[in-house]
Image 1 (cartoon, rainbow, N blue to C red):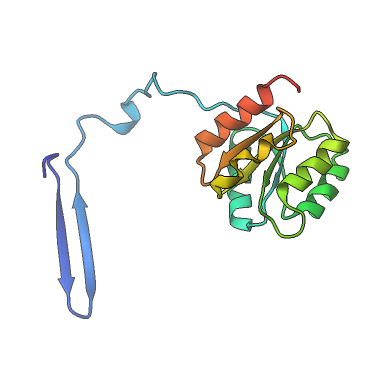
Image 2: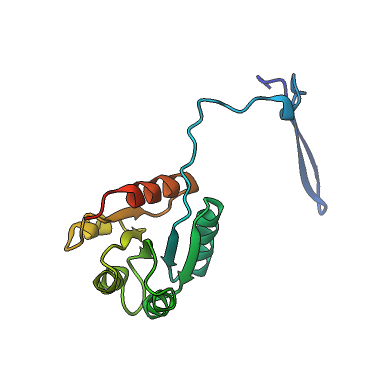
Length: 169
């Protein structure tokens, strides 16, 4: 009401309820509004990234976010599949994004295995468990980092770009 709009509720037993949200007419057309010049740009890239995540929904979402940002994205559901993908790409991957907790070989073991074959690989360890935050310091080079789940596209974009732009260890 303080913005000039209101809500209308229609309800009838056995027929359900409908809510109408009415907004006041805007002063100018949406397509004539200039974009906010102060909004920070989202960093993008073209590097090759391997996403390893056992949850298909999260894997697909991360793939879509990275693709939208311009990266060449490959994915795997587990460590053994990730190793097959890496061999197929001749270990020419710039960034590994892996969940730490996975069935079978976990993400930190996978990262160590892949780093032994491709020492210039950057690693982003991802977990929904905050106690894993120190994992990147336990025997990993400075080319490894941690990202707490859940994350949004902008957070992922900044963390990925920061890691890829960091000098080699």
